[in-house]
Length: 274
Ligand code: SIN
Image 1: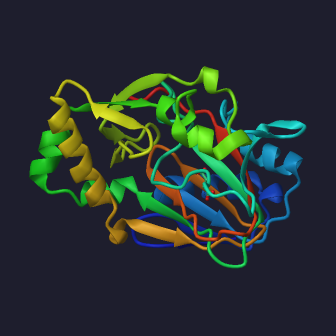
Image 2: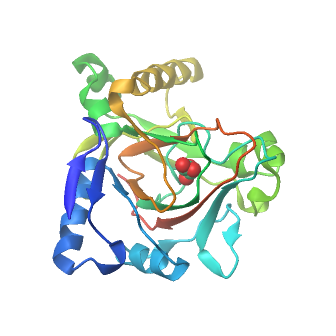
């Protein structure tokens, strides 16, 4: 097994490995790489749904996503699907999964089944590198701030996006949760500091005026959106990507109209953030 950096800010590529056959020692190395790099990319995997689930369960209990349509017969697996005639895609903007939960999913494990002939890449951003890249004044300004996250604008009954994406999402009546988390998160397992706000689900910085909250979030987002904090993953069928929702953002590009893109995602339970 070989592990090499995918970019300076985020991600590592794990080669010469079959994730269904990792020894405990190899799994420990993979877990360390996951903590060091935030996202891992395994090429050339041949997973049945059962093997995908078994790999996910080595990381922890499965966090059943409430809103994605599930793969038939496999409630653990959320379908990330865009049909050729569908215009909107899932995850087509910078976000991190489940930040609206009190205990956001620790990680997401995405397996590629059908990939368009070109396009459909996913961008990842590293939140520790982005935090390190802030100047001391900004670090001081945000050090004790908290932000509220929510999901009704994406998954709720009134969400225009949900209405437009059709039956890809379910359980609109179960949307509406909000959760407050630190803006600067000491990672629950490594202690490494990173930014924990995202354009997909963060609603506001709490206890500041709305204009100040908006301006501060925009400034942080513009900072994180600099390419120096990113890695772009070009998918092949058989790729398995796994990201840490507490230390990364991701963005599924929607530039393959007329082609099908189909992946299966499993999310792993996380802990309350403080
Ligand atoms: C997601 O946001 O979980 C989907 C990412 C992707 O389709 O690449």
